[in-house]
Image (cartoon, rainbow, N blue to C red; front, side, top):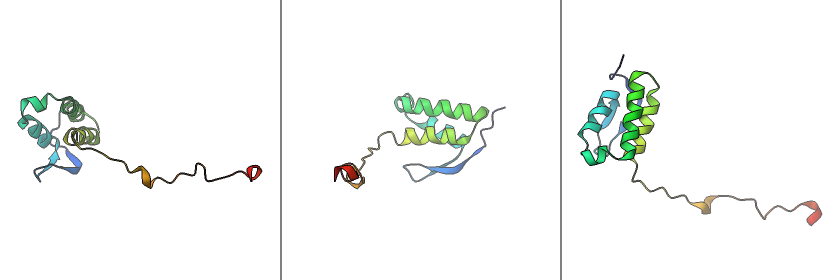
Length: 96
């Protein structure tokens, strides 16, 4: 039996400032997207996860799918200058 009223553990923030609280909210949000956006691979994966969760499964699965689709254009930059490396610093006693 499908249970669309199940709530996410934590609400999902939307770019508009609103929040997705339950599975039904997620389905309504996706249905209101433009058709071209709905057909994107990320949204298709989010819909598939949502449908699996509605039947039976952890809501975290649908949450991850929605967040990945919502953040698909976010560029992540990693600051490698912060990384502490020990390569080249340690010397073996025999090499002294």
